[in-house]
Length: 196
Image 1 (tube, rainbow, N blue to C red):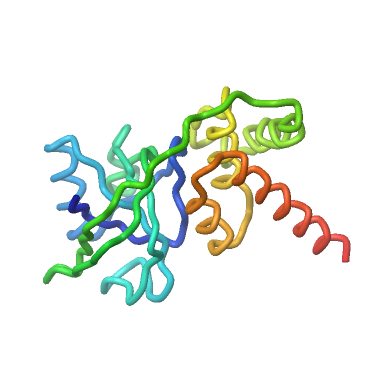
Image 2 (image 1 turned 90 degrees about the vertical axis):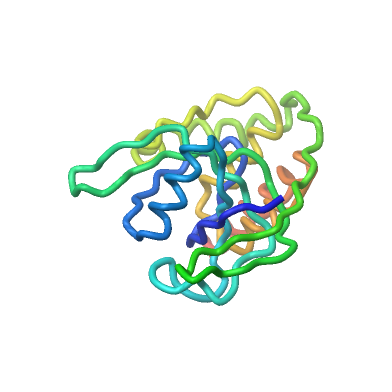
């Protein structure tokens, strides 16, 4: 499957929302094509390079398909879009066209079946509820009510202030329980750093 890529300094997760301001011609064209055809595009985290100008020299080997959920012309005249992460993918091969737009052959990653929340998830669920009340999260309008472990893991991984490398490790994990265990370990590490 071929997918146009939008390299960013962030990691998108399935079920999570991201607001983007589009101003480069290559991305305006890409978004126009996606909207006409009802297709998504790939969000990948930049490993080496910049978001603006030339295509980055290196991107993460895993990403998330983004589908456009809303668009608007912003006060500054630029196109604003809201996207939702849909499914994870692994990069097989990438190319850069003459406009510096990246394209990739991708392999979709299988998602394990979701499982219901369990009692041991209560603290992490309370944390997600608290994060949902933060003004920046509220501004996204992203629903933070989750019914399963997959949604809880994805939203916490996306919203918590973790390093990109940690987020990429979480995105690569297939099992929601494994992802939640790793999030708990990362939270304990953060807490240890805060009180060291």
